[in-house]
Amino acid sequence: MASRFFLQADRPVVFDPGKMSKVDLFRGERMFVGLNCFEPGQTQHSHVHAGADKFYLILSGRALMVVGEETGEAGPGTVVWAPAEVPHGVVEALERTVMLVAIAPPPR
Amino acid sequence: MASRFFLQADRPVVFDPGKMSKVDLFRGERMFVGLNCFEPGQTQHSHVHAGADKFYLILSGRALMVVGEETGEAGPGTVVWAPAEVPHGVVEALERTVMLVAIAPPPR
Image (cartoon, rainbow over all chains, first blue to last red; front, side):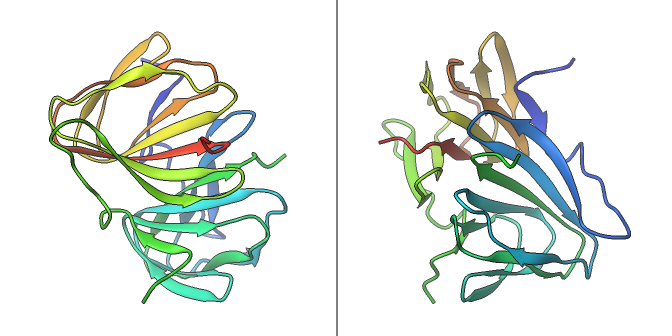
């Protein structure tokens, strides 16, 4: 049965052999929630969201990530906080990795 | 080593035998991230956030949850979207349950 409010995060996962892929889950006026999906070795170049707070929660897999001056290995259950104006990215996925991502306010 | 940006979501979990408990993880100007922790049978009364979008991601356990007119059983990996002005709550935790919660903008 279709639901407006309930969703299983592992259902819409999609991998792209060419580059990390994105899946939209929910979008409100003040927050966006989605997935970032990586094959081993894929990256997300370091970038900044002006005026938007963001976090990642690793659902499965393992990745080397960077926020500001910190680099860390993130695995299932790791929350990675990337506040507005602080550069962040995924240096490299060490396994097939799925991350939930939330951004407030939502990207245009 | 202390980190400003990386955190393991299962480390700060705290249960209260008297009622569901809350743990702050990260707070920015535009978004708050925390945990809600329930013992079996504990509830979160239905409530509304005026002007704030929210979602839950169930990290472990199982709970009966309500958003608007929908009631659903949520387990590991379920994302429950509770947009601004829509009443939502936890009818009952069916097991010991931990949920990540994000709210934008943050509660005062």
